[in-house]
Image (cartoon, rainbow, N blue to C red):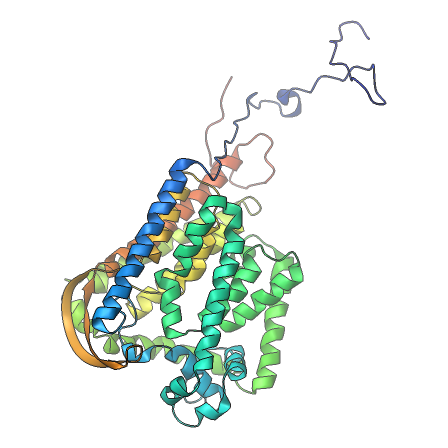
Length: 471
């Protein structure tokens, strides 16, 4: 041992027995000027009592809302608000698609924006003999079609639980809240193709498959069911994940071209022109069918001005959160960025239809939020807001219009009420609060990494963050 050297701990055994190990270098030797204490991140266990109690309470709210809906259905003969206001249209999202899958004119006459895969799927799972009449006739002639949708719904319940099982005690309440909540049940009532699309999305994004190619395949299939899911590629574009974008793009395009050749309709120009017509005319049709003019007149401009302005503000906040993917591309969570991108779809859907209530597109957003494993003040608020989006019960504030309609589910004439409800004001605020929470979590990650001495992720905005501690 050289003079002045400090003895280190002895190696007890092994090939270097009897030798002294050199002392671990100090942090300031490796990173001059860095503080000598590294803050320890304390991660709470998912089983601590406060989190379990909160999530179980939120699940109770969801179940109470479900019991209320069942009781109202037995009393009224139709599903009350915030479900579909026309009880004669139950299951018709699927049967309208299936009707046009068995005859030409889906893009030229019906002006659909669905890619060809949706019609091929409906064509496979339905009986062609039942579609010689109207789509309403097919609904009673071909119950197997709705049975396939129900089968995918049950499969979704299993897949969601398997995806969330790493959350331990939170897996059961989150699975039940999502699968028995308003967005999922609303899509199930309409038999919308979002139910099988969600199956594909969970397989792609739920951490269930190890094969990257299998995940890209299911992701491409999901994209070809619902075009707005292309927004989930935005975080990868912001984070400059070129390889992911190329593989996902090639997979999605290949599936589209194959289905286009098989179905022989649905060119990009067809979809684009129908999308323009949809954005121009569908909101007016929805406005008239739901008597929104009478409802808006009783809201003192809250409906026409305040709620859209609040949602636009939330979109602006979401854009600032998405910017964190540009600044710290490898550190911020892609799942959180994707959830934030999906909030803009939910906000745009509410503004476009001016429904401000039930929205089945929220199932993708809620699923990504429920995959959150961190339990902090901000993340707990976001998770609670997601639970509240699942609550099915609603409170009528003002009745603006009433009319009689035939209910398909009960098979009798029922009186339907149109008017202002509490959820039409609360749900837009929940979306904005989720946007604020996710944006705060993303930017906190940027700030925490900006001045870390041994930071792994480079950022061009080193001035963002806490001041350095001076010893």
